[in-house]
Image (cartoon, rainbow, N blue to C red):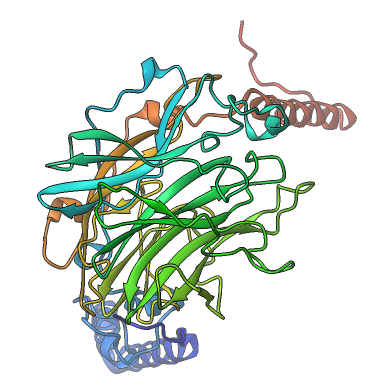
Length: 469
């Protein structure tokens, strides 16, 4: 994988000097009687200037040419390939609804979200996910004080972890509860959510967020707990304790550890996670999101936080997978580097490998080598994700879906390497101005028109533009 280089920039002085030489040569030829052909000579000389001044070649070079480049052209050689069509870590995404899941008529009382990465065991795919089945839809984080033991505050409040199986990755059969809420006061008594899976030495481990209060009371505060089993069908034994704790007061991850996402890398368990920071109960509009890393020798800890945390400055849900000798990450939402795929040769220091669009939210790719520690990650081609806006006002819920892509070293699908996504106009118009925004713009235009009329009156001028009848 290419590593960043320091931009050198262009050399305008060199270009001016070369151009001056051409103009001088043309003037000498004119004095020598070649004035009639002077224009042609100038063009030919200017065309021949390219190699002398180090112009960027028409044929795209495979490597950075040893010539001065703009920052943009210098940067193009930092990607795995100059063209996205040739970039192993670039893709389009295709989406398919999952079959056989019931959402209770879309009344907002049943929700499924935050799927784990699928694993394949004994001829079947397994997934685990957050399921909410409550008597009423969530009241909203801003009304968390109104939440009860029956009525949730958010879509991930009062949840349990369920699982489903599939033979083809498209049609799924819900099997039942994998991890219920433990009794109070154990971590997760209020809600367990956002699971992911680890396979380690023949045993299965589920990591998940464990809430002890309704989400929204002070924020989205929780730590990570875990359960283990000898079979993906369970039974699951809960640890009933915190596995990855929040940070010390004042640390960026002091409030919550979200989206635990373990892989096996360099003989250890690398558990990536998300935390929101620069956010307090009385000030929530300045928040930022970072993705961190905790490392352990045993699935149940102790976990040691990476000294360089956060290892990603953007993103929301965690999506990491082994790739070649390093780790790739799909950076989905939040931050200046959202909607990118990034790569780190050491699993810690990530650099942008591509910019992507129409990105799956809460992407959980099928990653067969996530736990093999092969040192030669092959990439991914499909996985699951979720959509959190399936219902209307007052009955909002989430659904899971399948995505397909080509981030694989073993599959070549040119249709996944295109660079354009065509949406119908109504897709764009659905992202229209709010009534308040439109009113503000119209008021600005009215004041501008009034100021123009007033300026014309003061100067004695009148607007002679023909008025509509």
